[in-house]
Length: 340
Image 1 (tube, helix red, strand yellow):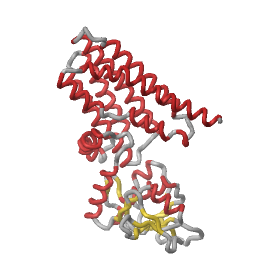
Image 2 (tube, rainbow, N blue to C red):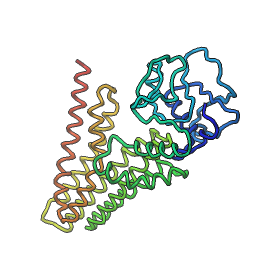
Image 3 (tube, one colour):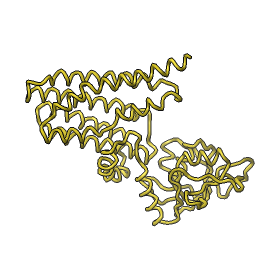
């Protein structure tokens, strides 16, 4: 029951009402009624194929229903809790929010994520800032958290108002990352490290767009997973070739090829692990996040500056194999436990 003025305010490329409808749909709400005298514009909800019913007044409720009586930003996990506990949502400081079940009575649940009312333009801007700040990934490392994502967010805030998709951004990131391998191979290590860093920054943008615009997809998930490994292959092989050319006394090419082979094994083991039961995947998922971590780009920059790229090859050529072996052992232990 969001009035036209508040409902049409924009937060990160979507109107308040459009974002609420998409969030409710993600939670599993159906049917979704919108109390309005006019048909609101719901561009993203329409693109997602979400069916809504526009009614002039709140319908009679024959059973418990989720009510959102004012513009707000809320996350699906909190709506899940409201529905599960048949309760009213309150903020962390105890403020009652305009979100709750129709027969909640005095029962309340405290929001774990962003849950903020939108009353006017000023509050909409504050809510938008909170939304951008919340857009992180479980794979984010220190460099992502304090450099790549903040730098890339300026681009995210521009692209969120365009038709450019997260998958298109992912492809650009992969191409730039793979191109860095060529510069490494020619011995231009510092330039290669800088280009790889640019790729890492852009790689944060696709996730921003996907989460801000409800554009997460299975295709995007696979593109991220496989794309990261393509970049790693190009980088490891490129550094191996480049160091072998500039420092023939080191087993650089062998180490580079070893690291590249390890990347292929990592991908195979990760794909195998994704078929595991959910209750066995927690630790494995953490390892997958480590595999997607981009913090090593900072190490490459430092080693390129001091002229010790062969050290990275030793780390990668051996460490990648230890990593995929650790993932495989975890999988085998889970299988044995399930059989027991």
